[in-house]
Image (cartoon, rainbow, N blue to C red; front, side, top):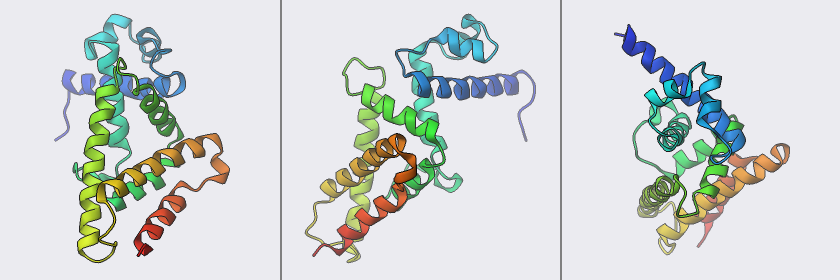
Length: 193
């Protein structure tokens, strides 16, 4: 049963704010985005927006979480990751330039310890690398991938390739097929003897 009344309106407004914030953060980055600008785009006062998200930092972190959620297929809502899931996400990213731009910009900004996104990205990468390394071990156990390869190293290379391909694609979308290139890397690793 769908929610109705004030609660449903609040959820809808929150979603509208997140959509607008995602676009503004993607275009301007964190530092050059103001809460006032996002509020204006959603027809709210700054105080009205802060009723839904108490700080700019809270709003930004929710945007990052939403970006991750939107990059998943509906059948991928579990928090398990794999090599195949990484490759599917890379394929889908070519349909979401705004989300890719947001991710690339915010992950770069998060490298500074003082960044509000530092903890989010540090934890995200820790989790992602652990999950993919575990999947690499599964591929090794099945004989699909050579046992002598370092699972953590392979996971790191795959994630680094995916991130680097996103930047290359943003700079020159017509010449970079991100999905094909990440699959080429995976196939090369599988053929390593």
